Length: 297
Image 1 (cartoon, rainbow, N blue to C red):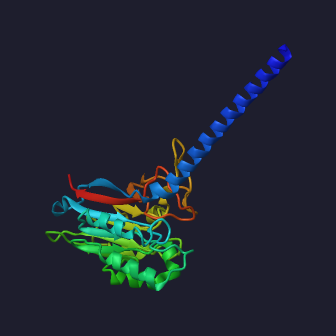
Image 2 (cartoon, rainbow, N blue to C red):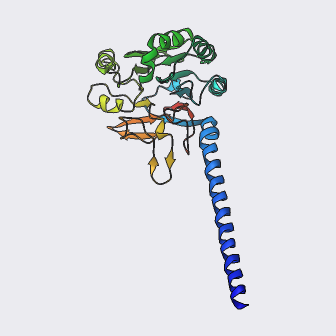
Image 3 (cartoon, rainbow, N blue to C red):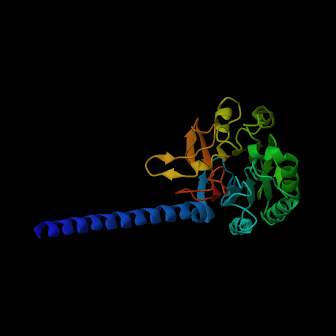
């Protein structure tokens, strides 16, 4: 009799163990599923605005409060597509920018686009509003569709800076200088051109716009020294692991995994980008639009 009781107790204990194990597995599976849903379908759609005051004595008085909106890496057809690109445009227009700067990678080189895609992009980018100028540079993934990129951006009112200087005047005759260069990864960047154009502007506040953060290493080896550099490309790793940094960085950019660097006496700001690449996920790394306000004190 006692043996039967002990056997029943053992069976009951074993059943309880398997019930607990089953419940634990259900909870773990649910957590993994919810986590995947969040990083795949939720966070990539949460577009945030990161605002920063740029303060420098080199900024002319007339530019106090001047607003530059900077965005990068749409990578159209990934998490930014025909269903939500209008949301991006509306978010940009809410910021009431004086200048808009797009930092390249409108396209994803692994996606085949059609005329409808091109038309959607042109119509939406045309709706972006800036009180003065809309500027752009070319990213490495735009070269597969280079002619279409140039056509869309020009038809949308953007001026593409291809190793060029754009002077911006606001309220008086003292300008800002914006230097735009195309992708370094495509061996298409030529800062020496800009050095020649910048010879007589030593005291002008200079902004260098380059698609890849490694442009800062290119700048140190030239005579051209910007006050700030605006870059993108890396998507800041897409996934951030607490206390460990960003995880899925772009090839060739392992030295630049953060949003800000002060190097060679230059400040560089790196956009999170808007779309995704290779992996359509984000974690602790929302897609962003950057708003810079300029002040000279």
